[in-house]
Amino acid sequence: MNKIEQIVIELQSKISQLVEENRQLKHHVLELTEQSSEYRKLSEERGQQLKMQQSGSEALTAARLRDNKADSDKMKGRIDELVREIDRCINLLNR
Image (cartoon, rainbow, N blue to C red; front, top):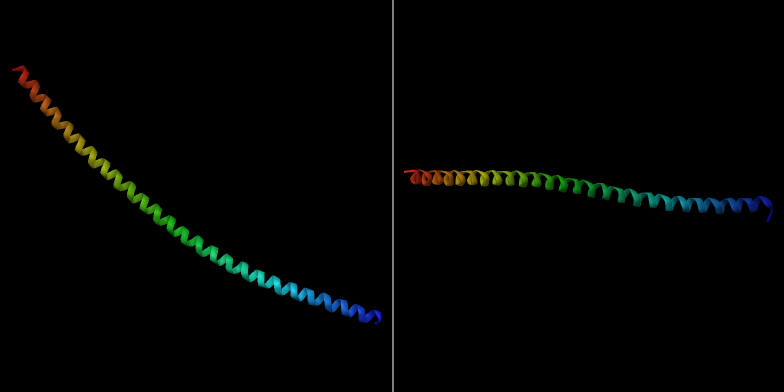
């Protein structure tokens, strides 16, 4: 084999290696693109779940505040009743 043929054979071998490497890299890029798409979709779903949980939490907090206000109003009413009863007792004692 002369020197030129040897160089051509080496070049062909290197080209084949580069073509195979390029094919593998394209395949890897495709896999990463699909994986990225899946992660984006998952991220969007989680974001929606988080928003739903936050709005549910806000609703629960509002409901608790209403319950606390209702309990507070009941307690004030009960205290007023007790104060009136004490006033009646004092009036009876002062007679």
